[in-house]
Every structure is written in C-alpha cells, then in structure tokens.
Image (cartoon, rainbow, N blue to C red; front, side, top):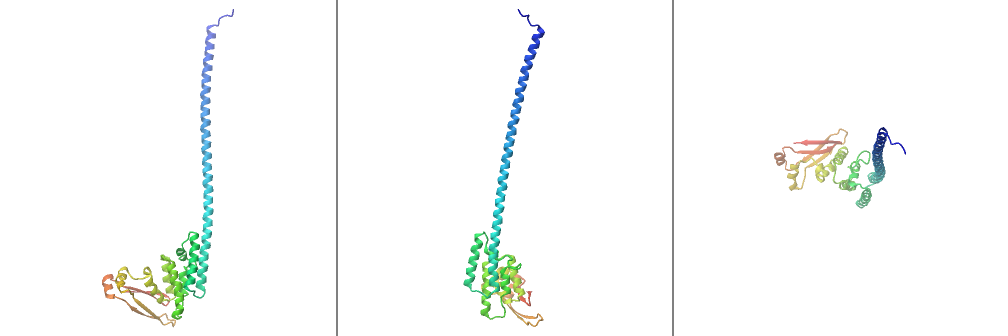
Length: 264
C-alpha cells in the first residue's frame, strides 16, 4: 500500500496545476493578440496594395491623357500651319476672287473644327511674322491703283475681318496700325464706318449720327515730296449739337505713315 502524500506535496501539486492553467491562459491570450496583429497587418498590406494599384492606374491615365494632349496639340498646329500657308498664298500673290476665298475659308474652317479650333480665333493669332493676316492684307493693299484694282484687295481685307468676328483687341490694334503705316486713310475711314468698336466716335456721337446714316468725312491730301506735309479736309456732321451733348468731338485719320487725332 503506497504511502499517502504529505500536505507539502499536495500544495506543490496544486500550485503546479494552477501555474499550468495560468500559463495556458496567457498563451491563448498572446496567441489571440498575435492573430489580431497578423490580421491588422494583412489589412494594411491589402490597403497599401490597393493604393499602389490606384496610383498606377492614375499614373497610366495621366500618361494617356498627356499623349492625347500632345497628339491634339500636334494636329492643331498642323491645322494652323495650313491656314497660315493659305493666307500667305493669298497675300503674296495676285488678288483672288470671292468664290476662291469662300472655298478656301470653308476648307480651313472645317479642318480647324475637326481638331477643336475656331477659325475666327486662329485668323486673329500672330500667324505671320508676329502679326495677324489682316495686317498684311492692309499693307499689301495698293493705294495708287485704280478703283478696280483696289476692289480685289479690299475684298480680302473685308472678308478676313468678317471671318474674324468677333474681333479682339489685338486685331483692332493691328488694323489701325496697318492703316497708319500704309497711310491708307481711305481704308481707315471705311473701317471706322464698318467696325463701330474701331471708330473714335463716342457712344453719344454715334447715337446722334445714327439718324443721318452718315459719318464724319476726313479727306487727306499728302504732298509726297518727302517733307511729310499734308492737307486734311474735315467735315463734321451735327457739330454744334454734338458739342453741346458730348462736350468733345474727336476725329482720327492717317497721314504720312502716322496717326493723327483732332479733338474739339
């Protein structure tokens, strides 16, 4: 018969059992925490991978968009070059008929439209030596030819201005400058009547002259002897009424390659 266990042995056995139980519980808790950390890390890795994928897609999309922009810019420049070539052909050669102008302008407009450009905007860009085509059309317009000879050149100028509508400030400045350099006062006065925003008339003066359907007349006679002298014949309509209403009446003209203003 085996001897009975002593109280000390019983307490030691009980302590070991309790310790083992506590150690087992601690191991389970540590294992749970490790599993939780592993799960969190897995989520983090998945999130990072997702972000990388989104970034890669965005980078690829940006690359594609850049390529599209570069391709569009290239075809737009080609369209502008085509417009420039046609304008140079018109400006450097003999005057063309209105039918020929219409065909070429239509073709250029369609080519510009296909690549997202507006022909009116393109024609007002500094396509030729830093100036819009209408500037060169004005300079190339003869001032000493007969009326028939000027008519064909006038057609190009006025057709260009019609195709450029609405005119921007740069085009208006180029038109005025071209007339001044060419000393083409006849054309300048015609353009004043045709393009209100180019005219020096104030709004009140324009209202007062509207019922007459006429405008001020400024005729310039240049001596062309190298002295730069000229004679200006000015006829101002409804002058007294305009002075009472507007308090100031202004006329503008071109002579000897320079602009002149007369204010009353």
